[in-house]
Image 1: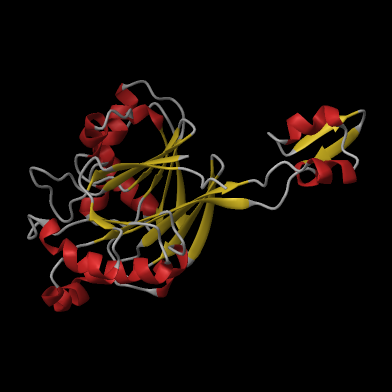
Image 2: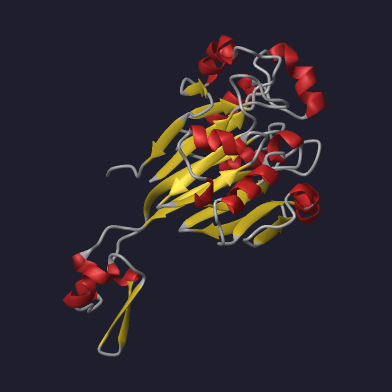
Length: 303
């Protein structure tokens, strides 16, 4: 199961009812934070989440509304007694950007491990999740993220018998990849059927529509895309600033056969995003205008 919480849904600048961009994903007691806009640590506390539970921070790009909350977050982690390393991934320039922001957080009681992204596609392995970073099209290097939780096949006793796997290790192989008995190593592939459908979350903001988004949103259980502008008359502005319209996000969701779409990263010039929601829902009915604190539990499909 993946728990997804949008901590902030604002773009450019915070508003009284919107923190800046940030998304928290939790899996088996471990957490991934995507982006860290101003106020992220406050939004975490409002959502009842601990700053200590973060293991991986994925930055989409280095505009201030996506990373300006980092120094305060790091300081809070240190003051709370964190000693475990924190991994941060982001586009080219990560070390320089983090170093600059740390001018006001120079001493931390825990190490930072930086992973700089440069290829059009890169995969990070984290707590059983496959995290794919994919390049998109903004006014500076920018990445979207696809998180996939795989699901092993069902236990197949017929297959186990055909492969002469002793009954004593059947239970072990349902939980782990290998088991050893009397000097022989048995593998999970000898007792399980084909892999079942996993869980996919795709998150992408600050970009024009590009094929990479559709590719990595394919059949996503939840697709989170920016909705910077709700009105199609803002198309010229979207083209200029390399952002997306509600309608463009909905078209991507429909083409990718996603299960549902959350819009986020609203322009401060759009105080009521839901006024534009019907047009997006006409393209992709399972669309909502997400609000700060919007939470979903993504579970494996029952078969």
